[in-house]
Picture (cartoon, rainbow, N blue to C red):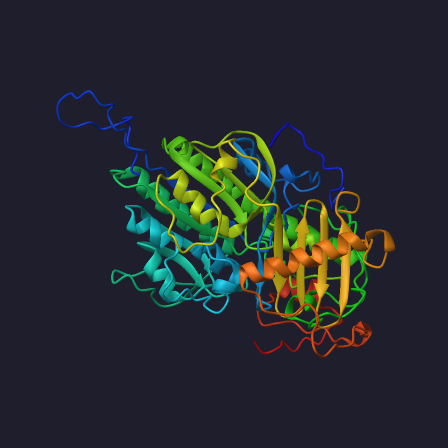
Length: 511
């Protein structure tokens, strides 16, 4: 682990309880044995962003975006720079990602049950162990699992996305069922207000039980429509395009016009990507502001020192990298996620390069809270890294998207395989972190390619992935994006229609 410094500039940036005040509670008369100390139960605050790239934070070395409050959480804890979500079996990858997070299970053990039927969720587990559980924001895994998991919920979005200014919110009623939909907005305001109200009420109560507060923003997920006063916070043209920007992806590997890819016309232009980044960063900066308000509330009410804070996201986003806009691929900008953890028992100001998955968080929070992790979880306990007792829990990461892409990373080497196109990419991430130079056909690296192929097959067996690395029928990789027709979906507000769909067919697509 690397000690965090005040200013970080990454060489290859893509963009230049119960509050018990006693140490132990003892009963009975004196004995010769050491008294048993009862472990404190720490509060848990889970802050979850939507479609946020790992490099879209100041603490990641991005000198353009301003995220001072999230950066302070990193300074107070451990920032993981090689954290991944495992992938998805559907274009809406955030649904399996959130299912993995809240079940502690890997992709192929949960992808057919993203509604989490019959699965003990992370908040449900903490609820069963004496926590007051509260949830707000996006829950993409069905109403039933939310109702099981939380004691209370306000401004809950059951689904994948909405117009940020018109959010279909539901509140948990007295029968612990989510009530009727009420349209509210702006999303980041609505969700953070619900969390703030819960924490304020908790602080004024008896604090007998610890809390588990889950705040899931829908920002910076599209529509790329910042709150009115944040429009222009990053003026158009002031942000550089990604270092791996392309006009088109060099080959077809799946549905190249999936909804995310329709958010800008083809060919991609630097001007359009710069506009997208301006709005994307503005939405993240508002999230950062609300995170700062919540941290201030914890400190003001004497809750901060007894609270474990997690900041993470469900997946990354292309937003111009490799000619793509969405997250339906396995390049680093999409499979890497921000992950920061801080609080009691966690070392301060550390950067960890350890390979971790999003679904490792469940068993880790159990350990930090003095609870046994459920035996059925697949995630690894990364608390030894958080405590400075270990540098790693695994030596490689395996990721997958539908039946179309598989990837393996070991050390600084990464291989991406496209079974249906019989295409392989090999990248040396130490010298080529932007995944620009494909070394797969270079004779010098055939031994490395063979090693990674064998490792990928081994990982497939371990995670129960049955897709062959070469399909029976190879599909063409050539395509003509100049013939694609851009069409907005029903969630795009007037702001994005005027900004990103000027020459598009403005008859909205059916959803």
